[in-house]
Length: 248
Length: 248
Image 1 (cartoon, chains in turn orange, cyan):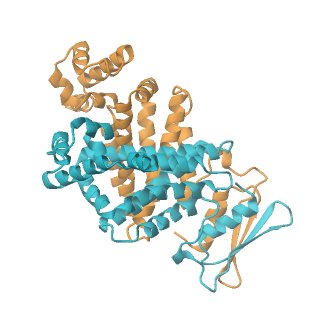
Image 2 (cartoon, rainbow over the protein chains, first blue to last red):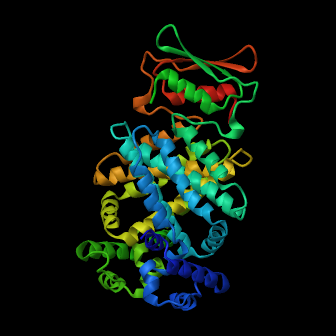
Image 3 (cartoon, each protein chain N blue to C red):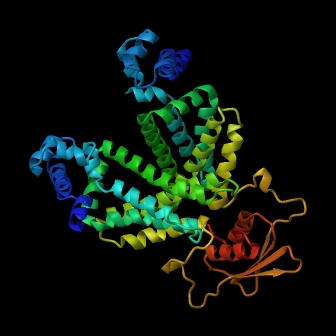
């Protein structure tokens, strides 16, 4: 019965309600559209609407619950072999992919959300739930570390802010730019600030003439000498120092 | 008429409404208390309540509007002589000071907010407004910098997360700990990640035997040599490198 399972995961009636709602929101405005208007256009009863959406606001963001569940499952399936900052960046990327699945719908919703204060408040509360999911995972990974909870909360907030900055850039471009490249670059900034093993983004890779910085432990044992070419990305220098100093 | 001005800034009727509201919230619960109950206990009319508070939720957080205005004014009065990351940390500290002004009220409200989902949502939206105020200031200061808006948004989010982590620690201790020391330590973590001129927290200061790292520009012009004692806080090394490499 896999066809039925699939239908239950994304039931056509739910999709029809979302489509009807957005058609009316765009035609009449969000405030001027009632749940009754939506169910009439979709050709279903009020109870069907409320089976899928607790309120009119929820129909504007039909995929966040699924995405939050996906993110939580992704993080729960992580092992100690996954570097934690990299892992939360990958988790944040799942949200971006949800938006990028359907660019025109995402852009429409972005415009609608900007106009309706109630929807902005809803969005802020959803963002907060993503942030808490990332922070809870990091708190677990940082158990026993000095200031583990503080680090977890700060890094989760930074990841979410970087993601949202990139997401909004992409939405403002009407979904025409490269969503994943934009978000990866933004997340790389967070990893360069907090993560132990950042990777170069394409425009930060050393020029052919560049050389990676070299760190060497000199005599006496407690002095570290770093030799670096001017223009080397700072994160590469920091990475080299961290390795040399044996920090986590 | 300065006495009148002062009375307008913190009118006794407003304070009486807050006191009446909290007495009822604690006795009966937030949901079970109506605006009518509050005005009856305070001995004023409904219109007086709504003159000060747009809704019942607003009476729970009577000082955030003033604090947001103070923060915005503080940031607007900043000059180019103020290092921007340090400045937003100082701005965030204003929020902490508001909470620390009245510890028992802040602790009561913290407990109430944890129990009432609507108040948590309100708080999340207020936090968002603080974050945007800090981000807008930083965006202005980072104008012309590569990825200026991204940096601004990420740093603002990190500052708010660090502040809130420290604030909640203090509230969980029933307002008994040293609020400012806790928040300063948390903000120092953010400054060590992003700010160009962090100051050592007491437990991170170099040991008497320690020496600051030394960076020297060697021949040829484009090679930088950094000599650092093992155990030097990483932020000090990074600071030295940034200075040597002439980064902003």
